[in-house]
Amino acid sequence: MFLSIKNVPKVYWSSKKPLILKPKISTFFFLCFGLILFGLGEGLLIVSTSGASPWSVLAQGIFLNVGLSVGLITILISIAVLLLWYPLKQIPGIGTILNALIIGIMIDFCIRYVPTPENYISQILLGAIAVVIVGLGGGIYLVANLGPGPRDGLMVGLQKITNLPIASVRAFLEISVMSIGWYLGGTVGIGTLLFAFGIGPAVALGLFLVKKTFS
Image (tube, rainbow, N blue to C red; front, side, top):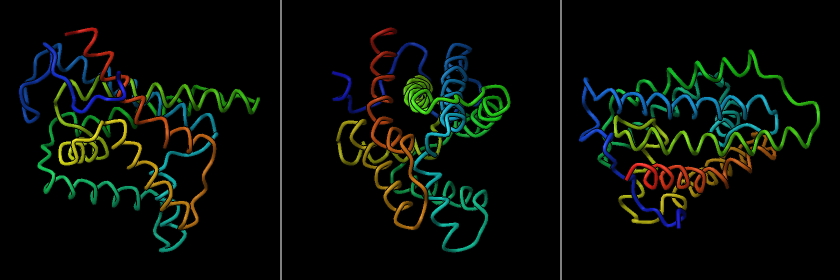
Protein backbone atom coordinates (compact mmCIF):
# COMPACT_ATOMS: atom_id res chain seq x y z
CA MET A 1 0.00 0.00 0.00
CA PHE A 2 1.49 3.34 -1.07
CA LEU A 3 0.55 5.08 2.18
CA SER A 4 2.99 2.85 4.06
CA ILE A 5 6.07 3.84 1.99
CA LYS A 6 8.85 4.87 4.36
CA ASN A 7 11.68 5.87 2.03
CA VAL A 8 12.45 7.19 -1.42
CA PRO A 9 12.96 4.15 -3.68
CA LYS A 10 15.97 3.68 -5.93
CA VAL A 11 15.53 2.66 -9.57
CA TYR A 12 17.96 2.22 -12.46
CA TRP A 13 17.97 5.94 -13.29
CA SER A 14 18.44 7.14 -9.70
CA SER A 15 21.72 8.92 -9.00
CA LYS A 16 24.04 7.09 -6.61
CA LYS A 17 24.57 10.32 -4.65
CA PRO A 18 22.85 13.72 -4.62
CA LEU A 19 25.95 15.88 -5.00
CA ILE A 20 26.99 15.13 -8.58
CA LEU A 21 27.46 17.69 -11.37
CA LYS A 22 27.31 15.32 -14.35
CA PRO A 23 24.38 12.93 -13.83
CA LYS A 24 23.19 10.38 -16.36
CA ILE A 25 20.94 11.79 -19.08
CA SER A 26 18.04 9.60 -17.90
CA THR A 27 18.48 10.82 -14.31
CA PHE A 28 18.55 14.47 -15.38
CA PHE A 29 15.52 13.93 -17.64
CA PHE A 30 13.36 12.48 -14.85
CA LEU A 31 14.56 15.18 -12.44
CA CYS A 32 13.41 17.91 -14.82
CA PHE A 33 10.21 16.07 -15.78
CA GLY A 34 9.26 15.66 -12.12
CA LEU A 35 10.00 19.30 -11.35
CA ILE A 36 7.95 20.44 -14.36
CA LEU A 37 4.97 18.47 -13.04
CA PHE A 38 5.60 19.79 -9.53
CA GLY A 39 5.66 23.39 -10.78
CA LEU A 40 2.60 22.80 -12.97
CA GLY A 41 0.67 21.61 -9.95
CA GLU A 42 1.80 24.58 -7.84
CA GLY A 43 0.78 26.93 -10.65
CA LEU A 44 -2.62 25.30 -11.11
CA LEU A 45 -3.29 25.59 -7.38
CA ILE A 46 -2.66 29.33 -7.59
CA VAL A 47 -4.79 29.68 -10.74
CA SER A 48 -7.65 27.74 -9.14
CA THR A 49 -7.95 30.50 -6.48
CA SER A 50 -9.28 27.81 -4.14
CA GLY A 51 -6.63 28.62 -1.52
CA ALA A 52 -2.90 29.17 -1.18
CA SER A 53 -0.47 26.42 -0.15
CA PRO A 54 0.20 26.03 3.61
CA TRP A 55 3.67 27.59 3.32
CA SER A 56 2.18 30.63 1.58
CA VAL A 57 -0.36 30.92 4.39
CA LEU A 58 2.54 30.87 6.86
CA ALA A 59 4.34 33.61 4.92
CA GLN A 60 1.16 35.67 4.85
CA GLY A 61 0.62 35.20 8.58
CA ILE A 62 4.18 36.30 9.38
CA PHE A 63 3.78 39.29 7.03
CA LEU A 64 0.73 40.46 8.97
CA ASN A 65 2.76 40.44 12.19
CA VAL A 66 6.24 41.68 11.23
CA GLY A 67 5.63 43.86 8.19
CA LEU A 68 8.27 42.40 5.85
CA SER A 69 7.18 41.62 2.29
CA VAL A 70 5.68 38.20 1.60
CA GLY A 71 8.40 37.54 -0.98
CA LEU A 72 11.19 38.29 1.48
CA ILE A 73 9.50 36.22 4.18
CA THR A 74 9.20 33.29 1.74
CA ILE A 75 12.94 33.49 1.05
CA LEU A 76 13.74 33.66 4.78
CA ILE A 77 11.51 30.63 5.44
CA SER A 78 13.34 28.68 2.73
CA ILE A 79 16.69 29.61 4.28
CA ALA A 80 15.47 28.57 7.73
CA VAL A 81 14.28 25.22 6.35
CA LEU A 82 17.62 24.68 4.63
CA LEU A 83 19.41 25.33 7.93
CA LEU A 84 17.34 22.53 9.46
CA TRP A 85 18.90 20.20 6.89
CA TYR A 86 22.24 20.18 8.74
CA PRO A 87 21.14 18.22 11.83
CA LEU A 88 19.01 16.01 9.55
CA LYS A 89 22.08 15.21 7.39
CA GLN A 90 20.40 16.14 4.13
CA ILE A 91 22.63 16.84 1.11
CA PRO A 92 21.75 19.42 -1.57
CA GLY A 93 22.42 18.92 -5.28
CA ILE A 94 21.58 20.37 -8.67
CA GLY A 95 17.98 19.35 -8.02
CA THR A 96 17.88 21.77 -5.09
CA ILE A 97 18.82 24.64 -7.41
CA LEU A 98 16.65 23.54 -10.34
CA ASN A 99 13.75 23.14 -7.90
CA ALA A 100 13.39 26.89 -7.49
CA LEU A 101 14.13 27.69 -11.13
CA ILE A 102 11.83 25.22 -12.91
CA ILE A 103 8.96 25.52 -10.43
CA GLY A 104 9.09 29.31 -10.70
CA ILE A 105 8.95 29.15 -14.51
CA MET A 106 5.99 26.76 -14.45
CA ILE A 107 4.08 28.89 -11.96
CA ASP A 108 4.54 31.94 -14.19
CA PHE A 109 3.43 29.87 -17.20
CA CYS A 110 0.21 28.80 -15.47
CA ILE A 111 -0.61 32.29 -14.25
CA ARG A 112 -0.16 33.66 -17.76
CA TYR A 113 -1.83 30.99 -19.88
CA VAL A 114 -4.25 28.98 -17.70
CA PRO A 115 -7.57 30.74 -16.99
CA THR A 116 -9.24 30.51 -13.61
CA PRO A 117 -12.46 28.45 -13.76
CA GLU A 118 -15.55 30.61 -13.29
CA ASN A 119 -17.48 27.89 -11.45
CA TYR A 120 -16.55 27.45 -7.77
CA ILE A 121 -16.87 23.67 -7.96
CA SER A 122 -14.52 23.67 -10.94
CA GLN A 123 -12.05 25.78 -8.96
CA ILE A 124 -12.03 23.24 -6.13
CA LEU A 125 -11.71 20.37 -8.62
CA LEU A 126 -8.73 22.11 -10.26
CA GLY A 127 -7.21 22.59 -6.80
CA ALA A 128 -7.57 18.88 -6.06
CA ILE A 129 -6.01 17.94 -9.42
CA ALA A 130 -3.18 20.37 -8.70
CA VAL A 131 -2.35 18.62 -5.43
CA VAL A 132 -2.19 15.22 -7.17
CA ILE A 133 0.08 16.63 -9.89
CA VAL A 134 2.41 18.18 -7.29
CA GLY A 135 2.60 14.83 -5.49
CA LEU A 136 3.33 12.85 -8.65
CA GLY A 137 5.98 15.33 -9.73
CA GLY A 138 7.51 15.28 -6.27
CA GLY A 139 7.69 11.50 -6.31
CA ILE A 140 9.43 11.43 -9.70
CA TYR A 141 12.06 14.07 -9.00
CA LEU A 142 12.87 12.71 -5.52
CA VAL A 143 13.65 9.29 -6.98
CA ALA A 144 16.23 10.96 -9.26
CA ASN A 145 18.21 11.58 -6.03
CA LEU A 146 19.89 14.77 -7.26
CA GLY A 147 18.94 16.86 -4.25
CA PRO A 148 15.47 17.80 -2.98
CA GLY A 149 13.92 21.23 -2.58
CA PRO A 150 13.90 22.79 0.91
CA ARG A 151 10.54 21.38 2.06
CA ASP A 152 11.04 17.95 0.49
CA GLY A 153 14.49 17.70 2.07
CA LEU A 154 12.97 18.47 5.45
CA MET A 155 10.35 15.78 4.85
CA VAL A 156 12.91 13.13 3.87
CA GLY A 157 15.19 14.03 6.80
CA LEU A 158 12.38 13.83 9.36
CA GLN A 159 11.22 10.53 7.88
CA LYS A 160 14.66 9.01 8.41
CA ILE A 161 14.68 10.11 12.04
CA THR A 162 11.11 9.09 12.89
CA ASN A 163 10.84 6.05 10.56
CA LEU A 164 7.22 7.04 9.95
CA PRO A 165 5.59 6.71 6.51
CA ILE A 166 6.40 9.59 4.16
CA ALA A 167 2.70 10.38 3.76
CA SER A 168 2.34 10.89 7.52
CA VAL A 169 5.49 13.01 7.84
CA ARG A 170 4.53 15.32 4.97
CA ALA A 171 0.96 15.65 6.20
CA PHE A 172 2.22 16.55 9.69
CA LEU A 173 4.54 19.22 8.25
CA GLU A 174 1.92 20.81 6.01
CA ILE A 175 -0.87 20.76 8.61
CA SER A 176 1.47 22.25 11.24
CA VAL A 177 2.63 25.03 8.91
CA MET A 178 -0.95 25.77 7.85
CA SER A 179 -2.11 25.91 11.47
CA ILE A 180 0.66 28.31 12.49
CA GLY A 181 -0.02 30.52 9.48
CA TRP A 182 -3.76 30.54 10.20
CA TYR A 183 -3.13 31.39 13.88
CA LEU A 184 -0.98 34.34 12.78
CA GLY A 185 -3.78 35.61 10.56
CA GLY A 186 -3.12 33.93 7.21
CA THR A 187 -6.07 33.04 4.99
CA VAL A 188 -6.95 29.35 4.67
CA GLY A 189 -9.11 28.17 1.78
CA ILE A 190 -10.44 24.85 0.54
CA GLY A 191 -7.36 24.47 -1.65
CA THR A 192 -5.14 25.00 1.38
CA LEU A 193 -6.89 22.18 3.21
CA LEU A 194 -6.71 19.94 0.14
CA PHE A 195 -2.97 20.57 -0.09
CA ALA A 196 -2.28 20.16 3.63
CA PHE A 197 -4.13 16.86 3.94
CA GLY A 198 -3.58 15.55 0.41
CA ILE A 199 0.05 16.28 -0.47
CA GLY A 200 1.46 13.56 1.80
CA PRO A 201 -0.58 10.75 0.23
CA ALA A 202 -0.01 12.27 -3.25
CA VAL A 203 3.79 12.23 -2.85
CA ALA A 204 3.63 8.67 -1.50
CA LEU A 205 1.52 7.68 -4.51
CA GLY A 206 4.10 9.25 -6.84
CA LEU A 207 6.92 7.29 -5.19
CA PHE A 208 4.88 4.09 -5.33
CA LEU A 209 4.08 4.48 -9.05
CA VAL A 210 7.70 5.21 -9.94
CA LYS A 211 8.89 2.16 -8.00
CA LYS A 212 6.20 -0.04 -9.54
CA THR A 213 6.93 1.18 -13.06
CA PHE A 214 10.74 1.11 -13.08
CA SER A 215 11.71 -1.62 -10.59
